[in-house]
Image (cartoon, rainbow, N blue to C red; front, side, top):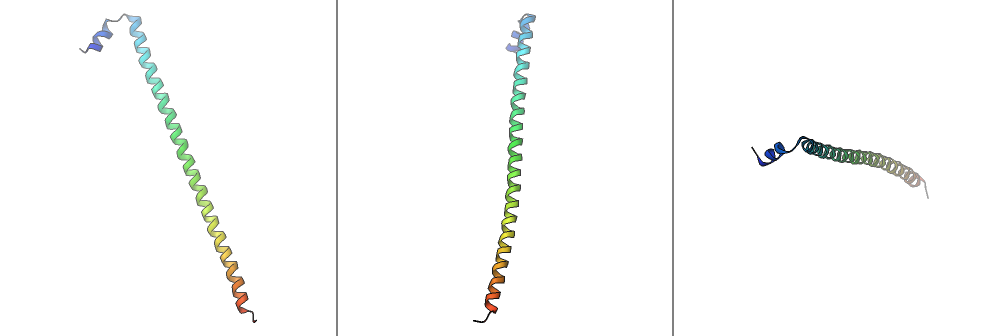
Length: 85
């Protein structure tokens, strides 16, 4: 038998109950802490994915705008080239 086991067996019943309740409380607080960290990590991951989606949409919009602008420039340039001076 270990020393801790002997000490626990020698305690009166009310003190055993207090020890068990403290151990239970430590486990519950530990699980609450892990749950909080898990929720924070999940929230951070969702924010990252949302930001990535916004970045992708903005990149697509910029590409479309750039292509449209280049198309207008090309049309103006070709009209200017076709005109006789």
